[in-house]
Amino acid sequence: MIIQVENLTFAYNNVSVLQNITFNVKSGDFIGIVGPNGSGKTTLLRNLDGILKPVHGTILLENQNLNDLSRREIAKIIGYVPQREIGIFPTTVFEAVLMGRKPHIKWTETKKDKKIVAQTLERLHLGKFTIRDLNDLSGGERQKVYIARALVQEPKILLLDEPTANLDLKHQIEVLDLIFDAKKTGVTVIIAIHDLNLALRYCNKLIILDQGQIFASGGKEILTEENIEKVYGVKVSIIQKGDQCFIIPDTTLK
Image 1 (tube, rainbow, N blue to C red):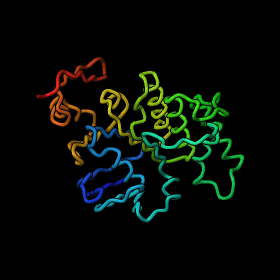
Image 2 (image 1 turned 30 degrees about the horizontal axis):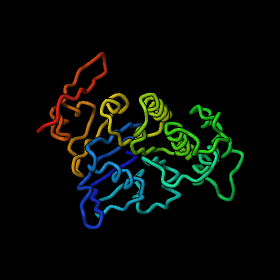
Image 3 (image 1 turned 90 degrees about the vertical axis):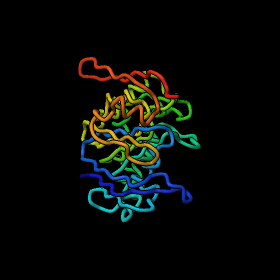
């Protein structure tokens, strides 16, 4: 197991946010964390990255206690893409992505670091934006830059918090295709995502959070009409087209 979470409990100012979270992640998994607003998805990701410290429970990262690892050691294993960046300062796309090499840089960036950045930008079709100011890009383009910055860390695990939030349909698919391509190279992906249909399309495993607890976990089969109705308070119909399932909202419960 690349990640083992056992009895994770977290609270903000004594207000419980996560309770007794337990699950394992295998190398190469593409895990979707779904659930209503306020269910604890972002908080769980921030605990997995070591940004937040649990009140109780343990997180093992490659059989090492996360609390025993330095930020640099964690950054060599985990790339984290938050839902939104706060206070974007003027910088070129190349410089923004180069920041992702920081865990590997001792004194100053090397030719190897710059080569990895250039290759990643080309692979993500961002080469034409190399010298553009990050603030001049669209939301979808910036999100690709943040993913590129995480990928140049050469992480084993990629954590993404709502990477398709506020993006149009085209950019949602483009961003998730990029993440799926990273998964093909052996990167383990854990993604908090609202769109259940996108979760069904890309994820091989799912965790449903509800009020800070795991309501269900497993394969795509856990996204049943009954489970969705209980967690989201919405009646849905699930239809099958080929090997793909689609969730059609019906009505909210009164």
